[in-house]
Length: 179
Image 1: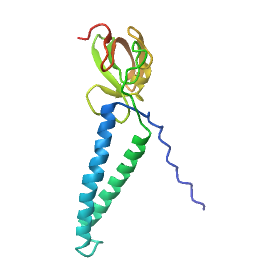
Image 2 (image 1 turned 45 degrees about the horizontal axis):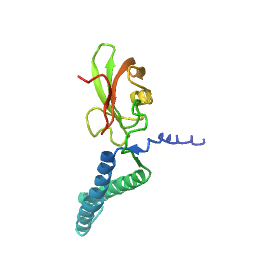
Image 3 (image 1 turned 60 degrees about the vertical axis):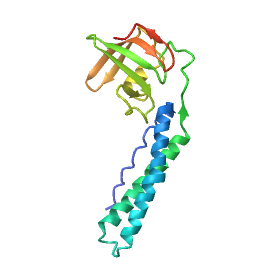
Image 4 (image 1 turned 90 degrees about the vertical axis):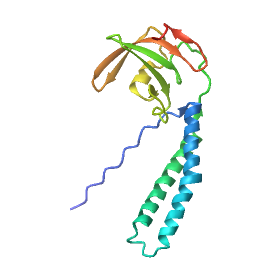
């Protein structure tokens, strides 16, 4: 009998290439820390473990080599990612609409309000309220204005929001004052 073909991994959708200056700085700092500090330290530990003799039963050597592969993989990823990034450090020409970098205050149907900042996929974990521009909520907000309603398909069901205000770093607030 023939072997059934192995399933091929599905390619991941390309993440957006936009990033804020703070996000780019964080990625560069991580790259620098991995390359200049952690990798040399782990390399030295692997060399010391290798000098102890039998590498096949040397846990420090095995762990160190595995950690070096992880570091090298992350360094390659960061270099490629940073190489193609577009750092957005200016508000858009039309600051009355939601674009990358906007702080948006939304009001749910029950009257609760939440404030979100639309950032790149590499930085949504930097602060509370940051959401990736690739997320369903951010995609539904793009190019919308104050007082427009948006509908988002969420795992818990369909949610509707009213855009209360839009704000950009270094710019004014458009819409009603936030609470």
